[in-house]
Image 1 (cartoon, rainbow, N blue to C red):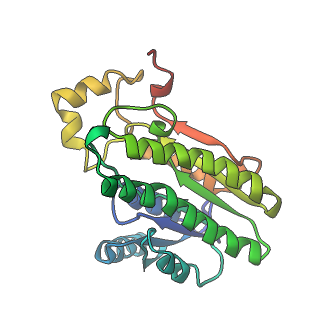
Image 2 (cartoon, rainbow, N blue to C red):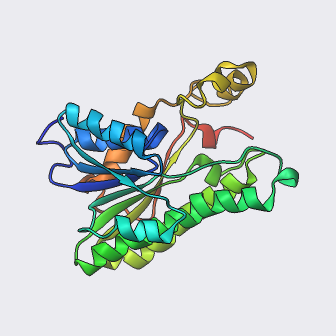
Length: 250
């Protein structure tokens, strides 16, 4: 990790950082010089990640955070404002809409949409109160822009995140707070690797114009664009990283 990285001197918060994309995002921000607070409910995983970042020469600290709990978010924000907030915490529910229970619906919406709003609002309040700007990056999905079967709650939440991003960007631009959405397509992770190796998964990959899954490293450049001053004149946008999936023929 370099002291002279793109984000040197910046502080960052990454929610949902205990695994998957959140863990990767935290490592990338730290590699570029940011002091990263890694937040999630699984504190053991966070401590492990913070130690790994320290061993690589970066700066990180672990923070217990439940985005469905306003008190937890309030406690997390009792410190100087973050320069960068990666609003990544999320869950999904896989099943037909007719069989989706109210509890399953509420659980996804409360985490993936309301939780994103709570974190963005609390982070922006700190930025505004301190008279400073910042960058809030909401992790949405191409499923917020088009749909697939059996993920009605998730797709609805991610569509809400895209529209919320635009609304918050409009309100907070005067304060120097930028709000953008990063919309990944199908990205290979430890959790989905077995599925994409199956016949069904392989058939899905063939529908991506580039004929491959995204790698987590494919998100590095877009993430750093939105986190850094390279995107100083960007707010209210959605940055899609999907190998052309959204523009594939119907």
